[in-house]
Every structure is written in structure tokens, then in C-alpha cells.
Length: 334
Length: 63
Image (cartoon, rainbow over all chains, first blue to last red; front, side):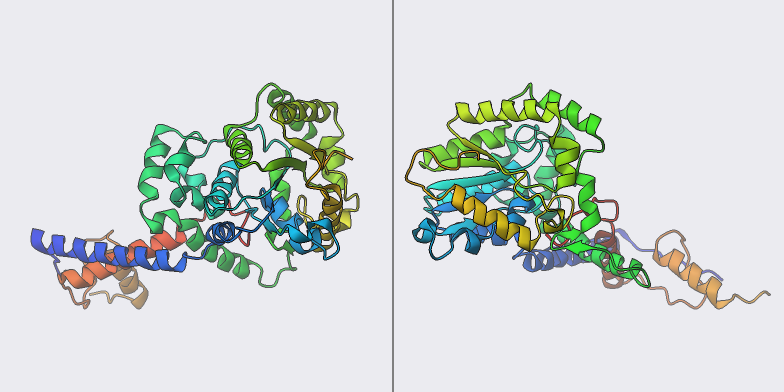
């Protein structure tokens, strides 16, 4: 004989309350466990960078490539000018702007801003869906979200989801939880398989996905991007740096020979480069093409990032190029 | 009368706990205790939350 489970309205309400209490507890646990995420640690670095005279900003290419201790050797002219690396992996210019603003807010007054980029980071319009905002993008939810929203596009639906998500740590920091599950899943799938090549940022093979699919696609992108201006977040980074009397130098980061040969040795890229150079010059920003500085493929950990050895070489050369902060002409293309 | 196998009983139990069946298998103590069902559905929500990120693009895990 089958048993019947019948509950009245009051029991249902009590069940719902218990369920919500469990979710609220989960929310608190996630908030506690994600109090020191990567983006929060970089923001903390920005708050503590009050004596920094040189700030490096950008995405993971700068995070991996700018070695503060090599950029500031004991005998170098920068000895009196501590540098700080405030680059954030997997970030767009909006997140980078938020970090720079936090540094300025903490009474940091750097004399030089080194902004590293690759491909179309300066000109591509910024748009997100709410689902895109995981990982280090989480900073958009909690660091000046109203200000940040004016620098990227969203559909009305995603905008509403963004507003709701940012109020619940369990939703805003979902990527941190999912990443743990994903790492576990990868651990399981790796059993009995040949080890995957990994860098400090994850699976090396994944970064090939961030490159253009083909030369044609890249050239089309160049032609399209060469018609537009700098995106709003980049313009704001420049404006805020100038407001704090900080000189800015924008650097095309070193890239592996394969990326250079496939994409950067094209007429379209040269034309695009001329275009962004003009845009930056019009705003008094120095431009440095370091994309070919490291011609040895073995000094890259994956399709985009410098290895430790490559990063040291790049930082040493960058220190030499930017060795004189006092002179008007510094970090000129060489 | 045909005897229910343990696997059938377990399937019916999971179907009941998951909400796809209205009746539990014979022998399962039925309770309307809101605490039990609140904890159960809360735990299910948490499990779904933890495992629902599979379709996300996890390129950067280690940052």
C-alpha cells in the first residue's frame, strides 16, 4: 500500500523558511571563503601601493611579464621609485580601471603608468553578459559597480541579472565555487592520461583559444578596429592618469614568434598599429611596441604568456627603456 | 506478489526525494516535518549550485 505525504500550507511555509535559511547560510559561507579572491588581493595591493612610483597595469600578460624585482635592480635609476604590478589575469580594461582608481584613492601618486596590452584590447568595445562575469571579472560586482556599468554594454535582461547577482555573494562569487569543482573534474579526467602542460594561469592549450581563429579573421578585425577610437575604459584610464599627473606608456606586450608571424606581420596589423599610435599620441600617451622583444619561443609558457625567464628578460629591457622618469622623452619605441 | 528488488526500491526512493514521484517506496518512513524537507531541499539547491557551472568557459582557473 502506498503511503501518502500530505503537508498543509503552514508546513510548506516552514519548509520554505528552513530551505531559505540554508541558502542564507550558504551565502555567508561563500562570502567568507571568497574574502581573499585574486581580484581582492590585487585591490589590496593597490591600496598598499602608496609609495609606488611605477604602476604596471593590464591583464595576465602583464601579470606574468612584469617582474618588479627585475624592473628595479639595486643599481638602476628606479631604486628610489618602487614599482607595483597591479595587473589582473582574465580582466578587461574596465576591471583594470577600477584597480587604478583604487590605487589613486589610496593616495598613490605614481609618476609612470605602464599599461601592457595585446591585439585589440584598446579599441574593442566592451560588452558582457551576466554569465560572462565569473572569475576575476567578479570585481565588477563589488568594486564601484554603478561606475563600472557605464563602461560596458549589457542587454536589459543581463543588466537586471547583474543588479540582482551583485547583491548575493553566492551568485557574484559563483565562479570561485565552480572553479573548485572544475579543478576536481579535471583531476578525475587526468587519471591515467599523459600530464597536460600547465602554466601558472592554467592549461597551456587553453590560451590558444584566445587567439584569432585565422589570419583572415584577424585582418578583418584589424580593418574594423582601425575605424574606431579607444574604448571608453581605456580613455578613462588615460584621463585619470593625467588627472594625477601620471605619465602613461602603452606597451604591446611580447608575444611568441608564432603569434607575431601569423598575425602581426600583416599589412592590416601595421595599419591598425599606426591608428592606435595616433590615437594615443593625440592624448599625449607614449607607445612602445615590445611585441618582438622576445624572439625565442622557449621563453613563453603558452600561446600568450612569458615564462619566468622571458618575463625577467622583458622586465630588464623595459627598465632600461624607461630608465629616466625625469626626461620628457622616455619609453620611446626602440 | 512480486517482491521489489533493492535497486527498484532505491530508484523509487530517489524519485520520491527528487520530487518526480508522489509516493515513497514501501517501508520508507513518511514525514511531513518541515525541518527535514527544508534541509533536504536546501541541500539539493546547494548541490545544484555547486555543480551547475559546467557550461562556463573555464579558461583561467589558476589565474
